[in-house]
Structures are given as structure tokens and as C-alpha cells.
Length: 78
Image 1 (spheres, rainbow, N blue to C red):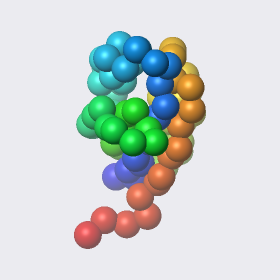
Image 2 (cartoon, helix red, strand yellow):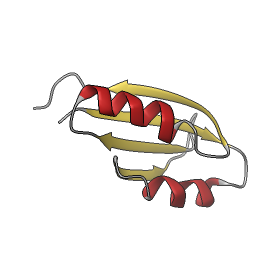
Image 3 (cartoon, one colour):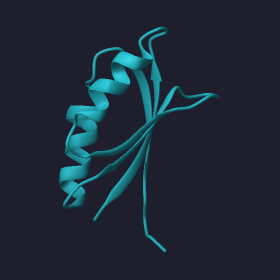
């Protein structure tokens, strides 16, 4: 199952709201607050790579108050 980690920058003060919305998206398996360059890290999984790309582009990145994202697609699992 294709997996991606998506690092997100969120508008200041909106982290809890965005996190709650992200956790309601079907491809999101985990979503966490983090400290550092990014505000939230999401682990997303889908049935195939096309569904994963569509979900990242049209669901995760379109959540209100998400300022920017960095997506890392997992190339293999141990």
C-alpha cells in the first residue's frame, strides 16, 4: 500500500482545527503536532499510487488554513 508523509505549515493559532479536519480524511492514518520547521506531520496511505497522489493534491493540500506542504512518498518498506 503506497504511503506518504506530508509535512505541513499551518496558519498560526489554527493547528487544532486543521489537525481535527485532517484526521477525518480517509487516507490519513496518523496526524501529529510537531515542533520545528513544520507544524503538523501526516502519514497517508491509499490503495494505489494514483489514489495517494490525488488525495494529497485534492484533499490534504486543500484543507483550509494549510499554508504549505512538503510530501515525501515512501519508496519501500522494511
